Length: 130
Image (cartoon, rainbow, N blue to C red):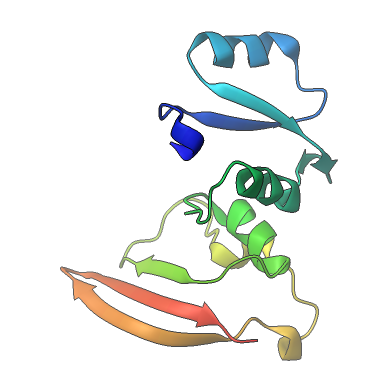
């Protein structure tokens, strides 16, 4: 891990997180870091600033639409890897659920750099246009 530490799970929680839950995570071996909250959630900028201080220079986000949307909305995503599968899941939620756009002119535009079929799934890689 960064700075010679052994690899282990790092969990970000909002300041004031319930102590019992934090203790349970620590007892399970996780390193728990309290960060400022923004709108009831951990600040994406705060999380990235912490990781940068720890010597981390790249982050892979693997989460749902709210996590992706929070980072996209703030312009904190350098590259997207999208896997499109011919299946409909859940309540129709998608990548853009957490990415609020008032007008079509403000929509996030992507520059496609790679596409490849993986069986029935389509793998796309793209960069946000500036």
